[in-house]
Image (cartoon, rainbow, N blue to C red; front, side, top):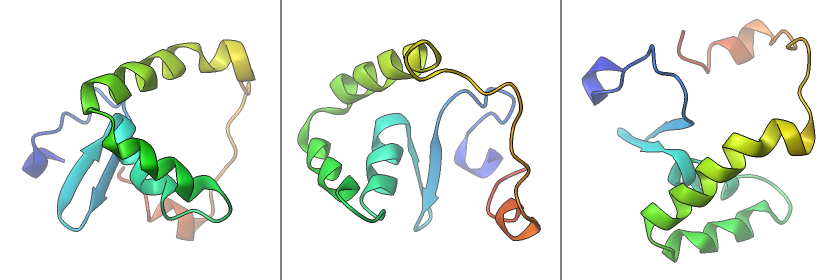
Length: 88
């Protein structure tokens, strides 16, 4: 993370490393949605909206997500294969 000028202790944003580039917040989420099955790739069309507007919406959703969707009291334990995909 240091090679991309990211502070691991912050860890308060969605980060995607793809093709040697780092994407954060709404751009990262849209790039991931583009690779999902179903209708999720259609969300990538929002990439044409300027980043500062997308990030404002992203931040609003992130701030209110637990109020809207609830919060789990415990986390699931990922498999060793899945753990390798995350920075630790």
